[in-house]
Image 1: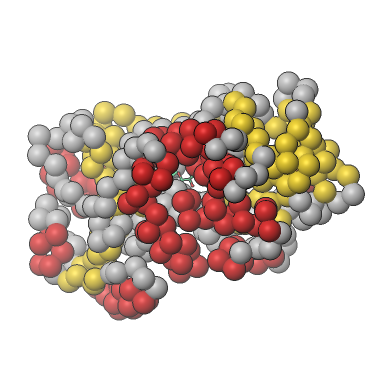
Image 2: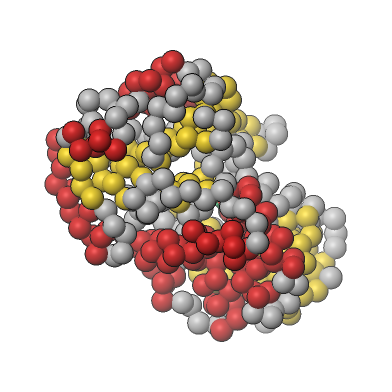
Length: 375
Ligand SMILES: Cc1cc2nc3c(=O)[nH]c(=O)nc-3n(C[C@H](O)[C@H](O)[C@H](O)COP(=O)(O)OP(=O)(O)OC[C@H]3O[C@@H](n4cnc5c(N)ncnc54)[C@H](O)[C@@H]3O)c2cc1C
């Protein structure tokens, strides 16, 4: 096997970048260890498309993504489940008032319309909130999307545009020659020649692979974000996508009138299965946070809880996007830290530009590996 551009990983980043490259006439091969959306781009519920509260370095990307999400289903010719429900970032502590006011100004100036709501104004948006909430940042252009449908939509569009996707193709090593990656080796012993560039977009699979193949220790490690799904509610306890400044909750209403709870509590690696698993006390702990925010959730039960999807976390909580040290034709994008989904439609075309044109796009420069002195 050979290809001009080879992408390792078949999640949202692999598929959206493959689509962008193929749409520009490039020859692309995607190597995916298991199946499309087998990693963090798959699993239960929906993913948040959120600018509110995001690191300021990522906001210009999110601004671009705002323009793409509403019509992405038309662009790709398949449903994405995108809904612009707005996001509330709540706070219950008096000392958070000043920061919220500043953040509202900064976000709005960067093209993310944000209102600082205080007191009763928050309950005008979500009447079911606890009266302990003192205020919130409201970003009405935020929303949610169906991550599995969107990733598959990108994959189908990439294939229509000429990309080749190989599933069950786990990359286990690289063959280097003259300061570049000449080929990749697969678990089944096959070799894939890389004629131009290789993009490592394999998220939770990358920390080990990069260390093994390049002696390149990324400033990242794997986490296993927890997702809890409720039994169906007779009346939805809320409508917006809801986060919190100091309680680790992200609350979404998902199909079937269920509450999806994620946002910070994590599972752990089960060494025997190689997958993440939940920690019972973390599931009940997270649920207690959700009930503290929306008391009506107490009437629902936990229907499902999982932590089976690995996500690479970075030390400063924003991604690492750079050329791989010592390999002039290799780009790595990793370390999404639980919030890589929303910006993917804006960021993946920039990865394709970088591979095709050779220049790091200005919007990606804040994410260079060199920001970590030891790496
Ligand atoms: C539970 C959970 C909730 C989240 N919620 C949000 C949210 O609300 N908003 C948001 O913006 N983000 C959210 N995120 C983060 C977001 O989903 C991820 O950042 C994003 O999906 C990462 O996409 P990816 O393509 O880089 O990785 P993945 O989707 O993980 O894809 C990587 C792929 O690489 C494959 N792979 C691994 N190793 C190899 C190898 N050696 N060879 C070949 N293939 C390999 C894997 O099988 C996998 O399919 C959440 C993540 C999780 C887990």
